[in-house]
Image: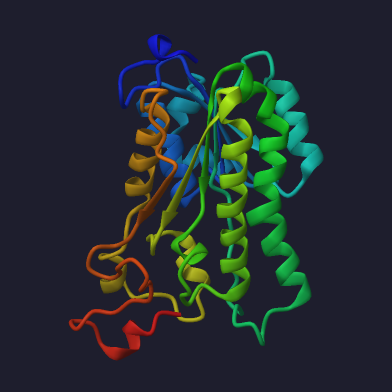
Length: 267
């Protein structure tokens, strides 16, 4: 997509986006923000009915958002969807699907849990890019990968989760090197603690007073929109976001003198 053909900053009129993990949390917020900005969004999740509930039946009914039941860890299903959408075709791919587990300390981490983390958090991104790469190339499109500050700084997210997010960071950097000459722009967003349902999977879920200080999914969505609507000459290659009152770069566990010690430990 040449610079002259792009809508103004913050607008996505005429663009076709695929957003994974779009039923709740960050993925849902990105899908909603893209629709608001004028894009048509193909929203992927294992529970498509939740996409409709969270984004609104009206935007689904009028075709601005199209839910799809696809598990990103199923490479064949992802490829089938890409084939189905090849006539549109897609110019924006956001990989926001991800999971974590309650029993995340390395001594508790089972082989099955490790495989599930890798298959969804890391392999799922490769499966999606592999399926949609030709369409992104043809449209000088954007790939956005939702990683985590856990990719670079140890925290209480667990070794398995951190390993998958580190893998995403390395993968996205490699894709950027391989594909920038093909017109594909790659952005990685690394949020700190975000108030999403994934926090409920923590061994000790954060209390409401802590969640009020977290990043919100809409904050990540706004950054994602910025990344994909910048002029082609500019690339928001990596963006680290942290909750102002809870975190700082390189120190990602909750630490605030106003919080009781039990909350500062994270988990």
